[in-house]
Length: 123
Image (cartoon, rainbow, N blue to C red; front, side):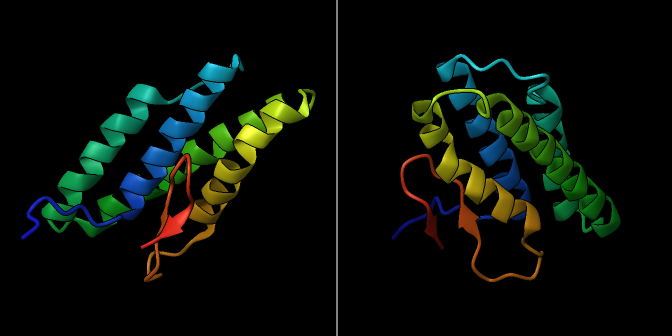
């Protein structure tokens, strides 16, 4: 019987997709304005605590902040890859589309998108 099960929550998916965009940008040599590495991690931890303590107004504010961070990174990557070659653009297309869907998805959606670098799948 499996014990270690993690269900996809909005905060974890937003932070994970931001982290993957930043890591691919570093591998390809794209310099981003800001990566939100420490801020994203600290907000995600706070959101997890707010959910456990049933502090839903603080939770929704934290998720909104994570969406803002992801949106800024997405726009920065899009700006940076406009002038680059097709090889770099192809590395980002799949993850950028998933990230945009994550930003636009509502909280009540049953099927959450998993930000996967290799295969986009749904749970």
